[in-house]
Length: 142
Image 1: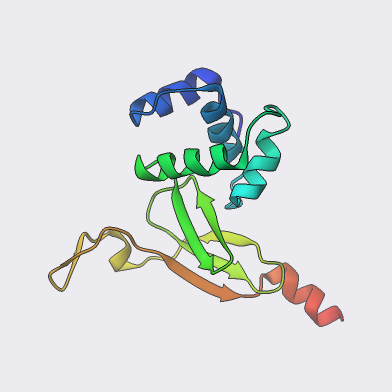
Image 2: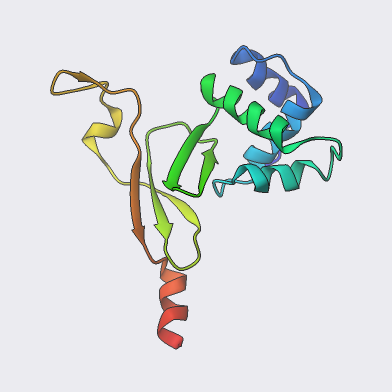
């Protein structure tokens, strides 16, 4: 996805975030990589354009983005958080072979509810774990 700097500026302003060059580059990296990257993946991508950026800056920026609703944090493993720029209600498939995460479109009545049995729902995270079809093919060939 090729997003202009004006669009990135508008997105940050819309969410009440003061734009900086680092924030713009982190947002750009999230929009380019729709594979639910980790802080390290984003850091490695952004540090090519901003060599002085630190992992702490990336982490703190992602935390701000999460608080302001630009991204959601996925915790599909205890080892790392992954970040998703798509904040709409949806589920994920995690491949136990390659570790990648895909968005999957499954209709779930609870994903769009704000209340379930009288309880307030603030977030819904649906994770399916299995093996991607391409990984199944590789698994069978061995």
